[in-house]
Image 1: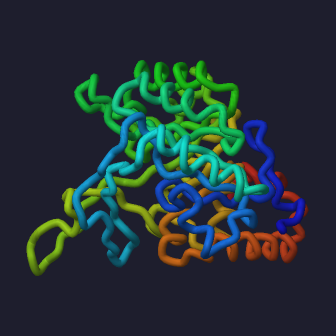
Image 2: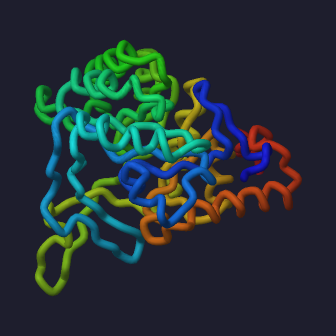
Length: 309
């Protein structure tokens, strides 16, 4: 079990360490439970949950390239009723120490609050992560996060459906990610997650067709690390909320970069899909790094970035 040097309290939730499994990569916990000890981690963020089931994008949905991975899963999920009936009871019975955040998606502003309301009675759920990078079908497909009015309404409706903490996950393509984070905070968010994937295209040179069935997709992996670290720094400077740093983490010093930039927690995704046991290793490696560098608490490092030569 992690030592107290790694313990973090963020948005009122106590995490035994800052290492979470990122949304979309851990399923609803059950999928990875035979491979890793979920309770060795700080927590997991579930696969997306929407009001109605989503079948997702056509196959192939995932492709690797030299710089990482590209995916277009299409937020496939069984819908909030099945998650409430089948997955949350399993989490409640099998995950004791790790905290569970539910990733929530919607096509319209009211759907985020509807999902939160449906799932909120579960004692398995510690909080929520709102994916506002998806398109608002009532606003011509503009991302919720790119429209301050829609973002405010999404967060306000979710806030009205729960007293549990709400994290808002933002896209790296936002023109002013810090300003968007401030909008989310003003609307009632308890924390910010940065970043989501970057849009990209990988082409099969033999067929001259996209590597993914959908065509374009979200880019993740090691190349996303500097993007996520910069977004974390920008956001943590303007909002006094805990930040979950997401993107490109493959080793303990990547986590340290996020913490120095201002993150309270981190979420690991692509690397765990490639090496399922990596998340547990990151916890032990992070403990070792703190011990070797005489860091008794990660709070000593948080937000300590210096620009001085």
